[in-house]
Image (cartoon, rainbow, N blue to C red; front, side):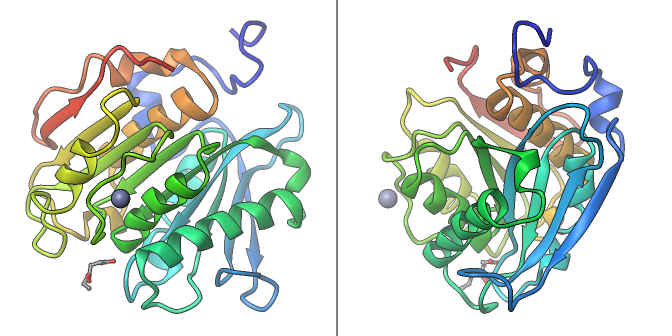
Length: 264
Ligand code: 9J3
Ligand code: ZN
């Protein structure tokens, strides 16, 4: 309860509340123009409209190779309405590689906490990153570069670097069983396996899914992302029930791996 955890936001979760298209918070948004952005390509900030609940944790989300912010924009209101400030970004160019996308995610977080008009609504000590494909590879790069990040969620990630011993950020990786662009056997699975074994980490492989499944509204991605962000950005152990024990294989989950119970 909030008296025990100053970062807890919103009512006690249920299976249906984390699966819902919107959470309990009404959401507003601000457009950040490419010209006003430094080190990334602009984007949209989605934030809980209320100022009655204190500050919120925040995340930046990068699209993949050749893709625009619109390819990941569904996550903005979906996650913000659960009680996060969410910055969905465009990259400087659509062909930027994962290491650049990682730097751009960090530049976007810096913009959010230092320059944006909602900076006073953000708790700058509780930040995370997500991304699709090369943006997911970029979220691993961002965590490697900034160990103070509290959560990373690569979505069908792509990267030539397969080894992540430097990462100290709790990381949930989504793979897709039918991904032929970033096959899980050479991307998501080795990324997961080459994170430190002592890290809070998880791997969920989406069933009947493709490389582009994270580009449209997806309840499996949403419910476990919300749970991971709440658990590690807000330290909200009310969400541990959805993460541990690991979700069992189902119509939407092909396979799951992870350490349970969590250590941080
Ligand atoms: O961001 C992505 O979709 C990465 C997959 C890709 O097209 O890599 C080929 C260079
Ligand atoms: Zn490496």
